[in-house]
Length: 438
Image 1 (cartoon, helix red, strand yellow):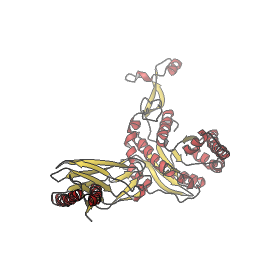
Image 2: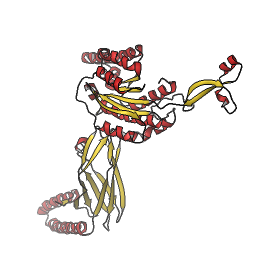
Image 3: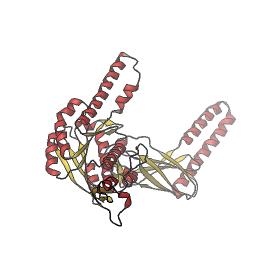
Image 4: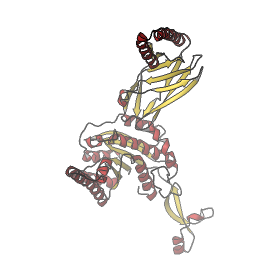
């Protein structure tokens, strides 16, 4: 059906029915009611002719080539009123099933011949393919008794990738070691992209700011620090895809948060002159992309991260150690995304983590449960509440014990919330670069 009767028509009809009923007792009103019924019929006919022969409304839906997981993605409509009178347009877009939005509607008023653009945002919570259906348009004319329905567009499949929209958001941090974005702490800035090589005797033309006064006093001659360009260092995002990373937070899994963060930090590392690579594992290593800084490296990482998922296996750090020992011949910075829930689960794997850390520099990244924090802060008002709070406190103590255990064994760690993950990883990376730990 291409047309409907509007709510205005039904309200008028109800009024006329009431008037006809009253007119049964008062004949003068009955005659007026019959005239009004005839007038309603004429108006409906006129409204129908205007909507179906007086023009149409064009609509084009503009979809991005791909959507960014966990970010606001812009969907646009370009709407053109080809009528010679003002109309009201309701746009009903067939949004992908993954969003579970059943009442979506945009209402727009257009003057004669007006062209406008309207938009809305979608925030996907999982990677994969999303199917957009057709777009339905409901047009109401100035009389407002009839609604004309039409359909525009075709079914379109759009892939949801890890958070590529955030890559440009952190570009400032790639240029300066003092990022000032919301949520980021200030880190001491590196004065230049060079590293110390040796001390030599001062010659004309050397930068006097690099004079080493201690060496000068010992040698009784001007001595100067010599610097060379900072070496490009390999930075690997090592992602645990075991069952613990399937835990959900705000409709996204820890694995999705880790993947988004890995893409952001890889882009940052490349922009700072380092090489970025990827390793994923569960009960055995699965994906390996060698660390490079070529222009298309981010695209390779993006395509690889898009398809990552868990098979609910337990992580095997012994196989990861063997694999890294074979594949990585150069000392590298390993950003290891995992999630230990108890000190016992860490102790089972700690031996292999320490072995990896002997050859490379590991930053072990694990997650703070914000729901546990909320339970701890709430006042307990019942026996059940007291038990729940005690369990939450014990879970938090386990995480603190994990962090302490890692520190005791010389392993750098980052204990953060999923929401702050990318920001905190950036800060940790800049801190490592500033302190020249690798």
